[in-house]
Image (cartoon, rainbow, N blue to C red):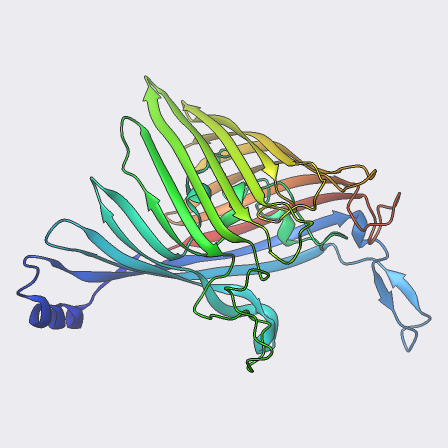
Length: 408
């Protein structure tokens, strides 16, 4: 990342705070981020005859398949401000500007809108731990142990889900980790490491993020505003935590962890259960090879953080994976499965995903990657029973992805 010294900050700080904190260093700014380009080849049963062509100069009305090839770009600019006080405390903030977002309220629908992915501040001490505050991943999400991640852009929901259409129930993927990177505004504490162990906890009053006190869909008048503090708006009182161990035994490294999350369901629906979910994971590394897995269970719907209807059984997600790294080359494979209760006598939805891939570090910060994922989705809620076509309850997908990622 590029480092820029804030000279003006140093001058002002010396003038105003010289008698308060001595020998402190001026904050610096590092600007970095990433750019990614990827091409995908998609063979999806839900794409067959999915598009209706109206009658006209092109001929009679008919249905056609979606195209199989697509390109995409993704980019983020990350600004990190960091300083150190005379008493040894580190402090700062991080703002991540993502350039891949849909912003309907600004009529930006091309996936090129700019908004903040995360924006948070921190205060850190080597003996007391780190306090983070703002729009940042929960403690459970930051510290959970999952499948090995040495191969660029290979994972349970790594690249394939960004090329496929929504399923009938609105969820493209179910296989993922606890909290799935929720950036709801929160306070997070993460401890120092003691004898290989560390822990973290976080709290968010609701599921919203950013500066606004009202939701995006709210109007500008008092009569139409929905406040983020409304108990009917989103899940509330989110608590998450994790405990983790990282150590080595000879040439073998071990990482193990247990993460948990709970939240109150929306108050206006007594038929919803409060959210609880847990994730256990283990990775073992030696001689370039890492093998590991995760198991997640609890009362949650969809991908994560969604209250289940009363009477529905809990959900499960599990996965196993392995990666091998030698020099600039990394190869890996994984297998994962998720199960969700559809309620009543309906069969559970199951999503099974397996994949393999490789990445090559072409130059410092630049990776080339290629991967293949196979997805089998069964009993999708709201889908047409017995159909694996558009809007069907079943779906089979093959996705090939090749691309490059530059991190700077």
